Image (cartoon, rainbow, N blue to C red; front, side, top):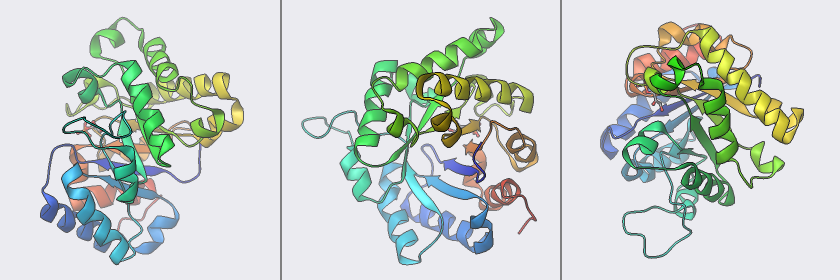
Length: 261
Ligand SMILES: O=C(CO)COP(=O)(O)O
């Protein structure tokens, strides 16, 4: 519903810090400055790359923003292997992906933990990119709207209207992630509209309008155009296609309304 879409590249567990620098440089080199008036572009590298990406972006005053793929629910302390919100904020992160289905599935993240991570992100002045999405089984039972809106409600428990307005929601159907099987624009729009309606019910129309709702799952340059034309889709969370500078910049340019760089 916002005028300016957000295209966020979730690199997942790919690229070391040197490869990360090369990719951000290629993106910034390929995408002329004027595109950034019409699209926000973010990269979400692994933790080990963030400092290098920050140094490059700040040093060269690039218009690309950056974030992280996860955060600890704890402020600090004896939590071996975890990274706190304060540490990420100090690295200039604007965004943190929270509740990605890969973390829910492989790391047993519950709605309660996702909620704690949303709050940890907000408490440190960053924007959560809160992921929700149904499995194929849930979709086949036609329970996808209920499932995703309940995930949203649970993740935002205790979050104020002002904080909710500063969240990004990403609808990522699990069956569309990394499979090449993109949701149809109509299917994606149906869920994104339901998520916005839930936000409106919980926080009012103004907050619901303010929040960017993204679609994620096999987004490529060939399907981004139709997706961002949907009235409730404000951009995309891109996995595989975000690792290829040419494909990713093409996708960003198309989200900005073109022409191709
Ligand atoms: O999980 C995703 C982004 O967070 C989507 O991944 P793909 O674009 O590779 O399907």
